Length: 196
Image (cartoon, rainbow, N blue to C red; front, side, top):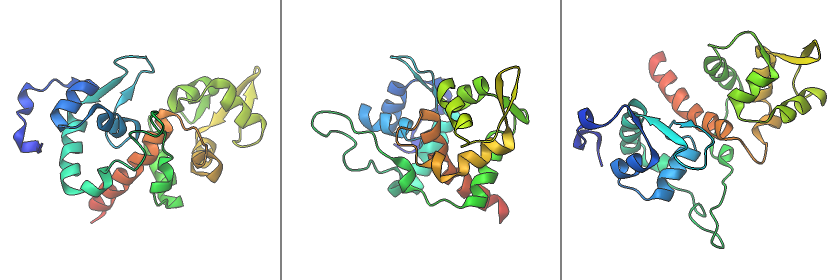
């Protein structure tokens, strides 16, 4: 399905996975791959059902980009089934990372947040549990300070950690982590266009 084949005036502003599947003319599992990999930006609620919300503008951009770069949207081998179970892929290995650009990318992602963040807020952003983030602090993986027994992380140090090999090679990544790594490629591409 191409962008100009769809009457976008009849498409709601916020869509569910099933609507995306129908508009993209793909299977449920392919739609799930697009969402879980971050190739199609979405809001993930964590609920068991109807957990994905997709903006119409993001779907329009996705369909256009998929037409222009179909190789980037190919579903990797083993995604659909392996011994009857869906396989969780390690998406970060598909991406070529530039350290300086990655810092700029995460600064862009976090620009609306204050310069110092409570662990609870970091948990809300990243999708990792509060005990996990406190463990990062206590093991010296991310620089922090404490106020009234509450760990506080300066945004600049959080970004340093996001760019570190330690963070990027976490085996079981959160939905946000996977999405941010995948959207880095799109951000870098759009940034290069603006620089021309």
